Amino acid sequence: MKIGVMIYTLLFGIKVFVDEFGNLYYKSKKKSLTGREKRWVIYNGKVEASKVPPYMKAWLDFVVDEPLTNAKIYNWQKSYILNLSGTKIAYKYKNTSKKNINSYSKWNG
Figure 1 (cartoon, rainbow, N blue to C red):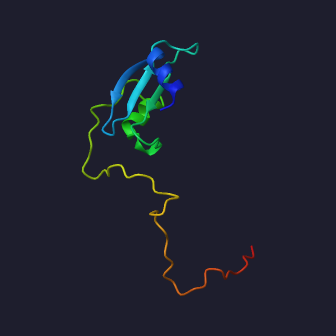
Figure 2: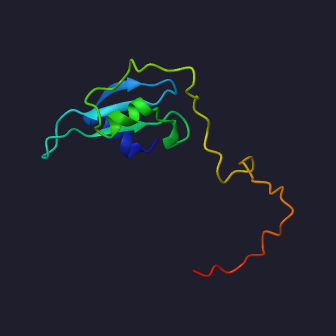
Figure 3: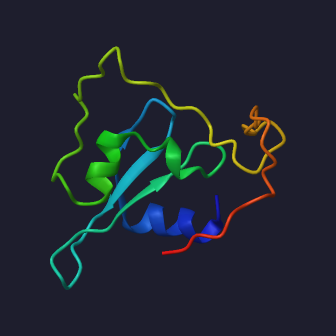
């Protein structure tokens, strides 16, 4: 974590919630000139925005006033999986068709 964020959080932040990933959620002690408080998250480990659960994303985006800490988790909901895009273990599409992918035909409208 950057030292500036740490100092700002210590001086102006109130801890609101800790999620199942260990991310810490804060809001500002005072409201801004617009009448809103600031809200932010300090990630546990790698900064990965997809680690924010939907119920906390709603709070961060001011959709709800209070965190939905008692949000029901359904058995059909999948748990978090790290975004692997751009890594060596990312999913790679394998074309199984016999067509040449470099050939195309011009579309005439």
